Amino acid sequence: MNNRQIIYKSIDILENSLHENISVEELSKKMGFSKYYFSRLFKAVTGYTPKHYYLSRRISEAAIVLLSCNKKIIEIALDFGFNSPEVFTRSFTQMFYKSPSEARKNGIDKSLLLSRKSQKELNAKEHALDKEPRHLTLPALHLVGIQFYHDLSYKNDLSKQWDILMSHLDEIKNKIQPLKFYQFQYWFDEMSDEMFFFCAVAVKSPLDVPMQMSYKEIPSQEYLLFRHKGKANEVGYTYSYIFDEWLPDSKNHLPSLFNFEYYGEEYLGPYNDKSISEIYIPLKKALN
Image (cartoon, rainbow, N blue to C red):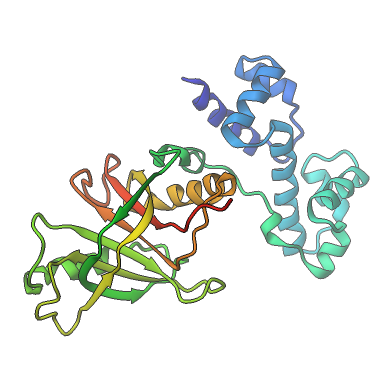
């Protein structure tokens, strides 16, 4: 068992101890580390110190209980291993900026809740093959395919739409050989949560486009190129790395309301862990 796996195991222990009050010293000893080394390793893997993670998880679960029933606050505090309602109230207020009684009356900002960290989530960086992207300019793209709206909150993937495209591939004329497949994501308003997709194959020109399909010409554009490794439905982890970790420290400005994925020779299918797809993000000149 390597160090990362040991941290995963320690998270399991913490999650099974949310109604107790296990100390970092106890846990680090159980994992075979000094408190100092274990705390550094835990933070490197999760982004949290073990104390912060454990406290935030207990308070988050307590908050869920608080909002879902009429159980007394002191009973909830004791259920989650807090020695006194005062300690619970102080920790709760620091996390949600309101006391438990205020939260029960007016609710909380649920984005402040800390959910359990899964191995998939903690392994997210492994999906982003490039910690720094390539800068390149692509010529104009000529594409024929199907466009549609997809609610990202749905658990299903886009395999149905791709199946439709592939089953009608012979109807598309003038395809570039070898075949080149693209998936565009675009939206009309930066403040909108609605996202539209375009699954397409590259063509030389729009010759006899089937009635059910659409043609798009994407002008020559400068892009940032990142690569994603893993299943198609795990690409969100790579996007999370790009926008949540890489972009904040970058001077690049990403102005366009679209990006796309390209599936080339290294793409081994949507459910293959070794598949590599390319993510292209339109680039505006770097800020000074």
